[in-house]
Length: 251
Image 1 (cartoon, rainbow, N blue to C red):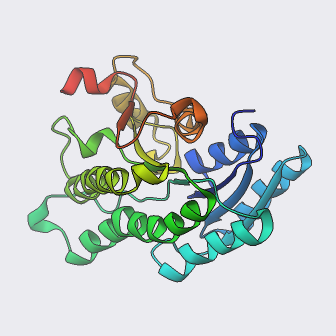
Image 2: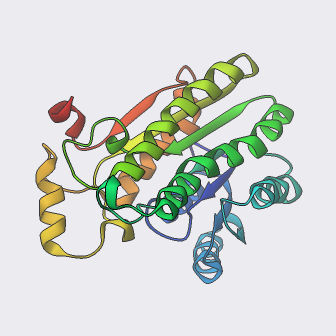
């Protein structure tokens, strides 16, 4: 029970890594507060947790909305008495293509969803963690934010995730003395909606990794569980590769 009686916010919780994290964290004893846009998916996941005697609440909304970030924190405090951590996992790939052909709206949408939403989430969560006397925040980045290995058309996505590393280190430095830890996981290719369902694409992505396969969402969620738990008590400001060895090949 790595997260016994801890209250954790999870964004992007309606599918993929976020949904896997919701189920995993609840099984490890956490009170989970689920956030995403798709209310029915959130309701189904919360129901699944409750059927297994776990504790879950949900609120649908847009992570790019500052009021929504605040509302998730308020829900955590109202229902469970406080906030101990957050897995800020929501994100998007956006339209891929060369910068010279990219619409400014796509660039802005990707940066807002992947980076500005992380700022808004942390801005709302930090005061609650301070009231709790400490806690942990984990962001979902990607290896593409460090080195994309020459993969074309990913400038907006890579820039947004690279910016997330700077935000992580700044937050970690600012709040370490308060007992608040901030880290970012860097997943490799993972079997989520973002990766699509084309077998040829999956085969190509799998081949980029020394392990020669893609990750299951739960494998990535396990790394977030570790960073939110007391086992990672001396880790903050870290980019943590969970990428099937791809960093070893690219860097």
